[in-house]
Image 1 (tube, helix red, strand yellow):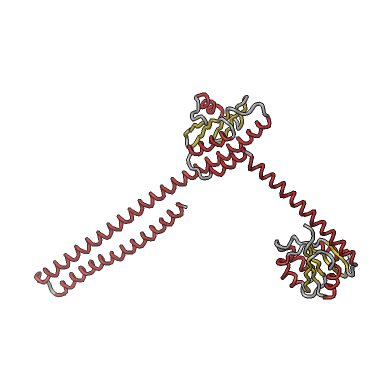
Image 2 (cartoon, helix red, strand yellow):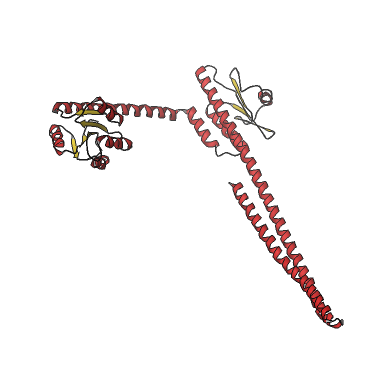
Length: 378
């Protein structure tokens, strides 16, 4: 679009009046401010296409203002023309280094400023044309990609298999993708010591299975007439109907098949890894359950033993209290027996505290095992 909005920045009102007089007969919307801070305050809202920016201003000079404008993603597209009383090479280079697009030296004539603005207006028009051309080209490219049946099939397949966690479902998706490319395929998956066979027709013939057996260790790619075999460590794909009369299509499909095989191989690795992690988690959970059961049994046994011991000592104490007075013992003998029986009872009671300590220790271990279990679930 042509130049429509201009922002003029100068700390001298007289200079702003001159600019207003020069541009008053042109079809521009002109806004004026008298400081760099004021410029930054209005620039986003006013959205000028060109800023006429004085260099020598107090507090914040033109170079600092220009840096701030070019650093802001919302304003960096605005064209900055420095207005300065000095026009040395060094001054112009400084203006260029902070991102300015043009430079005009005071005092300037009416025709000079108008000519520069007309040039900038033409530059804006050409920029818009170029931007539209880029947009059109980009749109055409994306449209071609979206309309490409082959790429669409492959993209859909890649998006789909990330959620697949079983070999039959992955093989079905692979066959469906290749079928969408117009290809007849047979697939062999070798995982965990087992071989799985799949085909777009449903069943792999014995000769195809034998071919897999012979060639899966003989190199990555085999081509014969209109057939192609692609090998990966865990996967082989045999295509039965490659186009033989269109070499360009043949080569393109061959590249697609190799890429699809590589992606599928990686998903097989992901499935195997997930299986191993799941098994490890299940083993850990089983071990945790077993240990917890053992802990509970040990605590129960210790507690039961303590209770039985205490019961025996209490019965013995009652028996002594009943029989000792009738045994004709002197006072020191009686006191000796009572003290030792009491010590034995106190020792039994102390075991209860030990049981509580063991129970607390086992509880801490159980909590640690639960934390491990939760981590394994992630």
